[in-house]
Image (tube, rainbow, N blue to C red; front, side, top):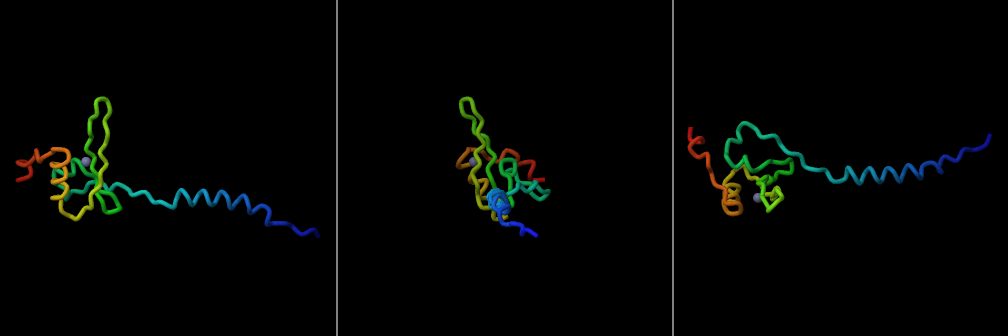
Length: 102
Ligand SMILES: [Zn+2]
């Protein structure tokens, strides 16, 4: 009986496996759907992601392009830093103030 050389076939397997791990290595954070308790107006401009940060979705209009700002802030259960950011950076202020005071 001739002995089979199993080793020669595993080399190509190894190469494809390494490629796969490169893809799965960095886990991309997912957007958390806006929940009912997020009633603040700032959530019109921010999305929360699974990495514990919020991302600014404000669209800056260039002469021809629309660019999503994408800046991230650490979300600490309070929206004050987010509203400050929007006013400071984008000159966006609470337009729905009266609706909020139900
Ligand atoms: Zn921004």
